[in-house]
Image (cartoon, rainbow, N blue to C red; front, side, top):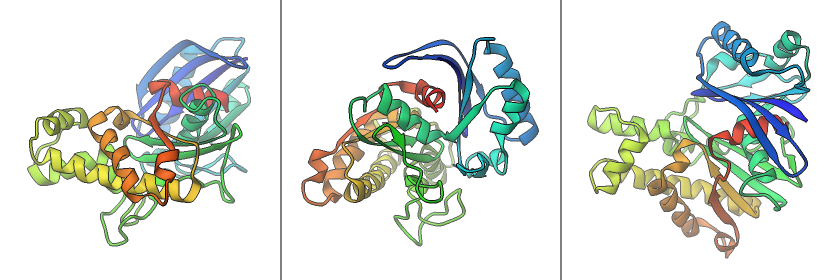
Length: 292
């Protein structure tokens, strides 16, 4: 089956022409752009860039998008890291524009589905995916199916409360994991302490050179992520947790977090649950979108 997969995140949008077969996939063509932050510009960018890579033999479109997607209506109810998506039914808009069926879901759900099907979790039945980037997203895949929960909002691990009187999160609440262990949180904390703005890769180099406050900030963030991962293990005990997103490439951070997890897990669950990084790289969300 030839599918157009779109991974619409808070920072960028990946478009891909993906050939899906039973046990393998092939990306025939792809394109990446920055995510517009206004509704009209976002819709225009989607239509324009789809037009650039779509072919007459495409059968379906899969759309992964940042935010809470109501499964019954396909409407994006809440997207704290890209407000332009809120209250939009992008699936319907694209169906009318291209006369093709469109499936849509949360971007972290799509990432997890891709890693469970073709990536690090291939062959396992119970997978949790965590995307570490602008925010922190999550997905649960059991027996090759995404678990959505009773109200379509399951696996919002980035919004588990780890300090009820803590930092304000982009969702409006206080103390969410995302406010402590996302790339946005790490960059913001560095800026608060120094007055300078650096990306996480530059901060990683500073931390590895034992420079403060980068070293302390990463250490604190990895502790918080370790607590979050331990909570997931204590509640769900999946076979594997797969870490993806841009921040997952910062090994100085993820290695500490994985090590810290064992301090907070119950019994021997910290030993039996494998935690690893994504195998499909930056294409995972796009491949997952195609799989939808």
